[in-house]
Length: 295
Image (cartoon, rainbow, N blue to C red; front, side, top):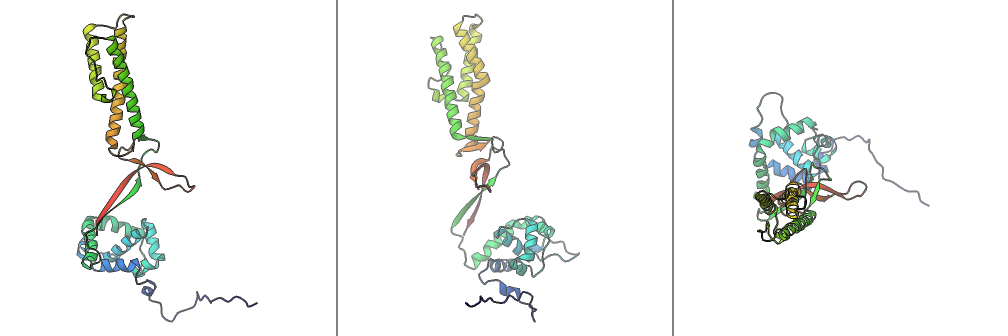
């Protein structure tokens, strides 16, 4: 039986001439696209932010190549970006084999690019447009879920809010209907249809009940059925009906077209997020961020 054969691995083989690192970058690599786009940009907006004098600064064009390339590769931390310039062959080529430190990356992102971000972004889009790679005719909208800084147990659901609001309407309607029965001949304090009851209608009904109590001076005698019903309705309206109806209406107004919201972050909606490491589905308060582009 023939013995297995392997190609030799000459890991420590000395070379007469060092290799050209650009030979390691494929022709269709994203690093070459970033290099071509940034290379055709007007450098003056970036260079104008450098005061001059002192020790030479890092080339802003090179920095502008590194940061978008890392973002497109899913690398966002300044320390990870700095580490990648020592380990990633694409970044070694973009930096000219001069690794960066995380402070340099942070300063460039915060102090250099931010004041001219819109100009730089417009320039990045203009270069491929002028080259005919994009037409700026098609509109794309992309969204992502960003977890909110909100209590995960602070949810309020539209379905539950509507259910409890309708129950409250029925309860209030039943009390007011009983008052109409007892106080026969008096004007009804609220609409007969419970579906028409809202916070304002309940508030007006409570005001009419209080006015009737004050006008007649009823409810002081133990067996005064009308007085007891009116005073109980007045207490319930002030203590429970109006506050709860206002809370339900406020929650529905804050939800808008959404199906839920967080009590601690009214702009957050409860969404299904990525599963945790154990494979459990996670329902958390989050916001949806959108980016839009024309291509």
